[in-house]
Length: 354
Image (tube, rainbow, N blue to C red; front, side):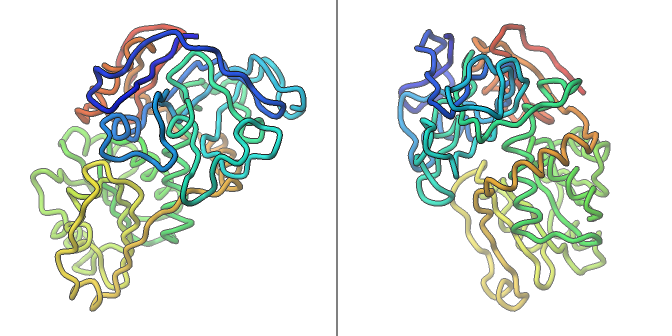
């Protein structure tokens, strides 16, 4: 099969479009022909080498968000058939014995993830345990399914399982054009929260309003904390959903009100952050909470809600597999609103704008 992989850390030039052996599924595994694979910031972060998940190793085929058609099943698989349209849960916790992926990781420590520690969807074929395969409804575009796994599960887990966001509360979401932020805005609004969103351009702020944000701010030119307090009548927001990290960490803390929660689920701008005022943190009862990996039992209900929720397909652009480097460069420039999708079966880059 054709795939994109890399053997060392570096810029997008280390990505190699090459022929590699087809994956071999175990008794409880399936083989999926990849028809859409959505990019994530971790694809770039791990390639650059400044952060890599425990268990990461070279050579590596990235791509966590995989959707396509089953072309082969293991001898003991009964829940999936050849020809089924499916999406893969990439987090490999709870995989049963009989799968080639069993015992590779757990929820903490050396967590195994397709496309992050195991070979993923920057390829024509991707193997996965049958236990982590979910059917795509008839009529759903395959790229719509591919935008779901990492971003929507990360957002859902962080906002509700970890952050305990409630209807009527205020939530501040940064980097509004990112896939995980788009998911967060939709989920928070659907839950009845008041959504404040920031982005790095005025155009992205306008688009954030279009997908449900109540208030928006350009975080390159505006005072994030002052703006958030102004919107909330001086009280501050209840929750900050943060995957940006270093760049907006201080502003996020000061945007929080009494008993506010900062839920951290990413480090796209860097892995080091400084608490600007311990006094403010303890006097205000601020909680800084790491959003841990989602549990296996969270995927199916979140996928069901996504399928039934009539959420829009926000695919920014599509690239052929051979053009993965250009796709990553576009993501690295933050020149994106929604998801960038690779099409291993061919095609060329185009703005989707949906």
